[in-house]
Image (tube, rainbow, N blue to C red; front, side, top):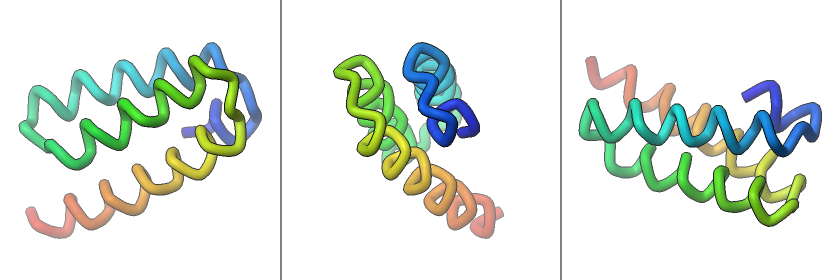
Length: 68
């Protein structure tokens, strides 16, 4: 999530919410929870946590994709 890397918290929150909804649709519970955590970190103004959690989403999604 590029917005998290650049520290743009408003965009990070927006994209995390969008991802969360996508993950709900595809029934990817772990990814949904991770996106929710990024969303909350961004909302709280915690750039470091948002950045670290966004990286967790990248890694988890890569693992998820390998299952298909």
